[in-house]
Image (cartoon, rainbow, N blue to C red; front, side, top):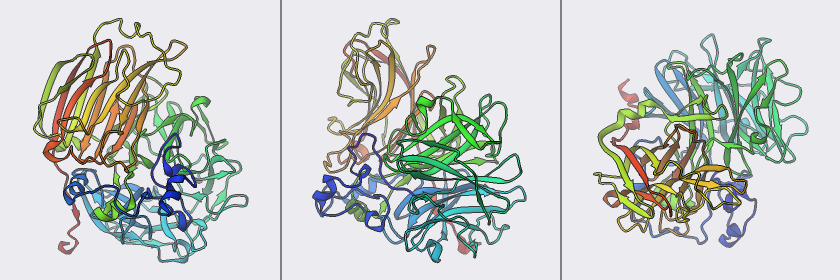
Length: 589
């Protein structure tokens, strides 16, 4: 179970327990009064954040990302592949477009793109989950059984771990789920706040033949992952010590732990250890509302994990996604041999807006996760290849000159459902060495800030007059010690004229090797932009709320805000079809 909307530097009203924003509103964000973290942006007035029209709301709804027919959604839960179907469960409120009454929604797909909605999988109907059926994970056992462990919230706001399993393993749709009658199977241990103990991971087999899983928690301000062992998934023993802990990172939720191959692009089943294997540890930081990860080495004998780079440990180093993204979860797809990643795209409008439009939140396009063996220090995330089935007509642009300080319009038929691949080159082989100005703080700044080498990139969902636009771009900065850093950024500050929608500049560093061009891929789907730099080394998800740059008024431009160099750009742009996402025709079975 997760809190909502994230920000890194304290300007986001949801990252603090009490803010002037909330006080001015005269009300708390949704969720706080129920004893959990904030789930919405409170409006500064008791009304909509903008004079939205039905046409604006309709345009915001995506065409090929998964989202329910209506109402509130947050974390992805228990993704798995079974008998020809991909299953996605998700935190869902069947009654409203704001957080509450959390159940498990359920959908299935043959290809991770086209989805069928199914009936609710689990609802809060027992004492051990009366406060909500919160986040959980699936484990597929060697004998074909499926176990689902999830956090239940009691009426006393105690977080306990529960077991559920399919009622009928011969049903490929897994329509009915049985809650173990002797739940809970794990309760908060002594010394742990019972309101800070949640989100069990997929289990893996240890060298002694017992299964292990992780649960996120904290002690004071130290975030950590506790280990539990089991042989039967009904009785558990807490392992001595912790898998890993990092001081100052606060509550860890939605922990994920999985192996990656250092010499192959193939995904690995969760229990794999040995030579050529690293382990990724990821935690969703409750205090910052961001998903951090690190790569390291797992010792299955001591049940400890050590980061390769202590300076880039969990919570202080790399982000899974630098944008509007949280509560991510992977699973091993035994059908194709891939490690696949899901993530929740959360809203930055207000709950008044969400109630008016009737829905809130979207899931990302599933991503394949691999180890970056070129850098050896990060994962790569890339959209599943199945999304390319939606590609329609292609427009190609070769070596487009974008002079310093200029904007170049790209003549395409429509700009609201796109798959864009682009390569940039800076003119002049010595341009990088010639950069003179240094920056004391290396971070993404607004695209309007000019320097010798940029920023340069794309203006997405922009209107003709550029009164609304979302720049996605590279920014090359020189630190005071003379080293160069390339940043990949998304600037939402001018993405909408709706002043009360929260918006900021997102992004982070991206390694660009000596023999590489500057490359990015963008998936544009109405109000969602997923941006991948350098093959997925750095990823940014944007959720934007244009008021002008919608429907046929949405345009696409190249831009170069450099003062000293020209860039050339080569692009392939595909129009994207809509996905088929509808209720399953159960009455025809």
